[in-house]
Image 1 (cartoon, rainbow, N blue to C red):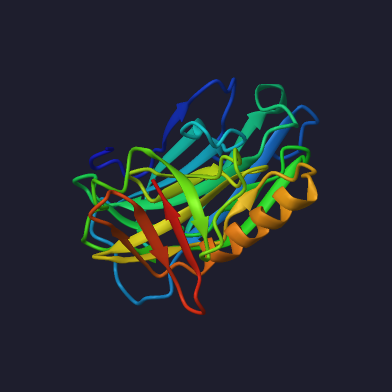
Image 2 (spheres, rainbow, N blue to C red):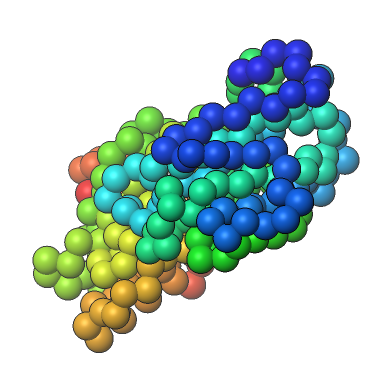
Length: 252
């Protein structure tokens, strides 16, 4: 990661022409400035040389891994960790669904704190002030390899099956993000895993108009997804997600 830097920030750019550590003194029309801070509620000190990371992603397409547009890494010190950066609007466009993720890493690079909710960033605004973003401690249990790194096609929601040819999908990456298609709209969110326990943060989705039947099924899928508490891989290879009140999702 960064080592023992105390006063400098390391900035990586992915397709952006300019990124700054602090918002400009006067906002420029062709720039978008994003600011906020990373924190957590627990009274736990960060290890020396911990690194805070803020990543801006393009979450418009959920059938592929989210594209990383910019990443800012700074020595964390102790929370709250303030951040601010600016990007040229022309590199982002206004028709993308942008989201921000905040993380804190140990000196060896291990992820120790992360945001668990999708944090939308409106690319049409000139200044986006996110305030204090609360992070959650990362479990020491790594994601189950059979869960991550593949696309799961949903074949049942709450025991009622699914509409034929409606591609409702789930993709869990190895870094706490879930994304896919609700059948009509794309979505993205965060997840945490501990043994067979699985919790998902609220998902953000695109807002395309859907035919009524597909829109109704998608709403039931998102409702079931937000209630998930456990997962299992059945002997036949099906992914089964379950939650309270009879909510369930089965995918292969």
